[in-house]
Image (cartoon, rainbow, N blue to C red; front, side):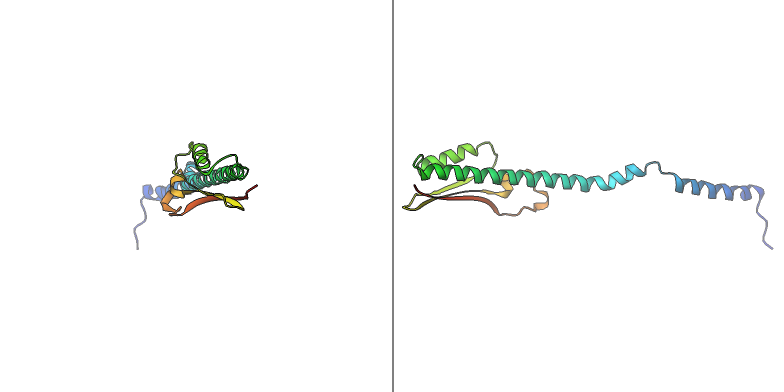
Length: 144
């Protein structure tokens, strides 16, 4: 016949179960743990939104500048070399290296292209996701 538990051990077992049950109900620190798990993903998402927003903003500026300068070449206000200088000066606020090309006006039209490596234009390149491609803006207009 097994020995009966000592009175002290008999009293400790229900207390141990009660303590474990109270720990299961205790929610202190749960919010901090959840935030520690979710915050890196939320910050990564926020950084991606900011990065692509800046790239879209730059693309829009490049297209706007190319359209404006091509129009000025088409009406005879600028020469090709002046157009390249004008485009570079309007893009000087960005820390990227731009390539500006202007095809000499023909009898029919004039074409301008502005390109920049995406890695140069990006603020962050997390994990090399942006690759080696160029972002290009082109504009063509009929000569008047």
